[in-house]
Image (tube, rainbow, N blue to C red; front, side):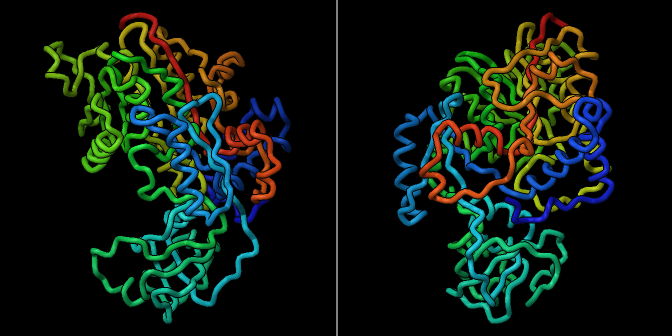
Length: 469
């Protein structure tokens, strides 16, 4: 059931997305009314969190059962003895699923308020506490230890340090302030810790702040599917072309049992450091991370490879993962996106540059997996159609496991080709309320089905390179 307004978009962006989801192929197949209704449902789902929190177990250091037992004890503490089940995904053996309880509608709103930014608000709905940098405004009388209601400023209109705010705000739940208003807005740059500890969130999700950090990686379900589709094997040389923050990189290394070589590239220095930190934390030694622009990763003059550093010679890798920079329109929860149409549509040319490099770096017989966390046709199915036209020696491949739905019509792909894609579309299931009583009566199979469907918007395509270029 919907408790938040649908995602707030610029009119030009909403119109652009609507044209995608009501293209001629779709309207011809399903009718205009059905297509329009599905689009409105999607916009509504995007502002709400998925039904499950997904964590990936680092199987390089521990068994899934051992980590599941440790996590059960942790959740008992966090939820004050509330018996929330932890499910092991049957098709993704290293993935654990925790149902999200909510929305909880009997939370009493307090006179003392704090306003947080939209990004901070999204994190709170996924189980995070409120960190000081995320607090935009607080009531003038707020003291440390006060019970306060937390709201998200979804349109970014609240002024930093304001004592009250009457603009559009969405209730996220109640928390205990760790600091006074004066301390929060003192101007001290070192204040980075928890500012408000959430105790009554609208959606009850576990917090994973420093929880079993060597054993668990918080990851959306489709992001874990991608690496299984890539299917890395021990001893292979694999490239993660746009790797930060390293979730898929470390997953590749774990599935290879840390045997082989995983090259991770990203062009932002602090993100590359994050990849290295994650590899160290998870005890993975096969990862080499470089600060390098993926569009320049191909070495065109056939000089000897420079000691395993980028740029690389053509056909250097057994498998390539291109989890491409994208508009991110599938992320959930997302109550507001202020991007212009120019920003949303700016990614397709970059993705094509990266894809071209990925194809050149892949050896004959090698596998290329392309993925995005967005819902646009231009960044997903249209890219597949372009790739098959541009690189006739690429073949689209069926995916294993196949958990998402088939690709979306509108890019001119054949029905058989659409069936080989995976598009995770959260609009395929209705929003629902989940409480602890309903979980007691739920069948495991039904919960797994819901976790597969009610996740973020995501897209995966898998190709094989049939011959040398």
